[in-house]
Image (cartoon, rainbow, N blue to C red; front, side, top):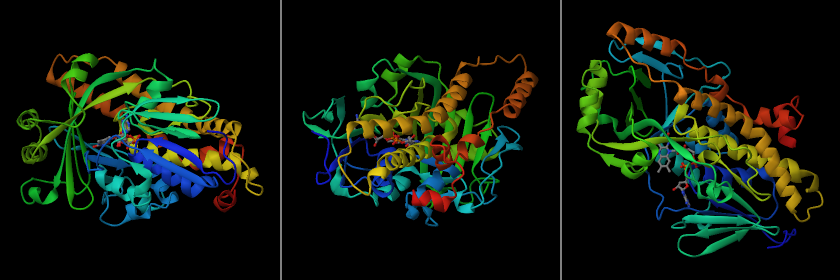
Length: 438
Ligand SMILES: Cc1cc2nc3c(=O)[nH]c(=O)nc-3n(C[C@H](O)[C@H](O)[C@H](O)COP(=O)(O)OP(=O)(O)OC[C@H]3O[C@@H](n4cnc5c(N)ncnc54)[C@H](O)[C@@H]3O)c2cc1C
């Protein structure tokens, strides 16, 4: 495939049609300004079902959704925003007392407050903005290569696709990343999440002191989370330590695997009455072992290929940041292409290999330092030794220290990706309307 000319489509291949892949398709088509753009997405699933449990989008993700024009995600019943205007409330596992809260520092629009969705609902909201004819289902990527003229994706069914640029949006176990950075390995973090989503009506009148807002209950090692979601749904999530090795977990627990709910009820039976009732009413659980990997040294994985979302930053479920980070990645990538090709807009010509590489390098400079910082925090937490308690009093003190010492994550949840982009290109003083004209 030679460099495209103005008449020929500029083909972008996206591996994976999750939140990151779909958002990248929307961002490139609406923001990049690439002429004659032809985006093709290749998804391993045979059907785009509403799988997964809850997903939280923090203010950075909500702002980006708006910039991408995915305004249907703001419909009143699509997601759930807490009633108190507090982004995170932490309560004690036994006493049920509030032990810590986060506050917003730079979120003036309440529509950008942290919103909790069923993952399937936010996925469906994005799908409305991508033509279904451009999404190829049952196309599991097994390999990828890049050469001077283009990129090729190889699928499990023996077929392949050719394009000018490749975006790996195929999640934390990315095959695109593996093809270009085979030395990168994932490690089981020692934590597994047990999750469920169900109709909120099954809780009616049955849970003492059921809070209106989303609540994290912190125990000594285990946690419990509960929240309303959009469209009348509710979620419960338990996170617990599992001492098995990465190899053992790989063999024993698949992502999204159904498990016996009885041990879940047993685990939380001595917690406060609200959590006890919520765990007893949880109708089923599915398991999500949490994997993490080191920060990549570069997202310019070839002159024509890069990564977005969990494929690019393997932080696992930490700080519930994955969805919002994927959205910000997509916007940064589109802005990078726009910046690089905008000098050509008045006399459109071929988008050559050097322009593609320049755009990917700019994207890397905007996003990788931010997510590397996150990975440093995440790895620091997992390296910390598990405490051994000599008494209940000792355990209680340790929990209080943990709550007090928890990292401030406003830099993550309120990050302004556009501002970072303009700082990196040296235009930090531009006003939003000046930026829009760029
Ligand atoms: C099924 C599923 C359920 C999830 N549930 C939750 C949840 O309940 N809560 C939560 O916080 N986060 C969940 N996540 C993760 C969360 O969606 C991501 O952290 C976040 O949205 C970033 O999105 P992403 O697009 O980078 O990755 P993902 O959301 O993982 O999307 C990756 C996409 O690529 C596809 N894919 C993977 N491998 C290949 C391949 N080899 N070839 C082609 N396609 C491939 C996947 O099927 C998926 O559609 C879930 C992810 C998945 C895939």
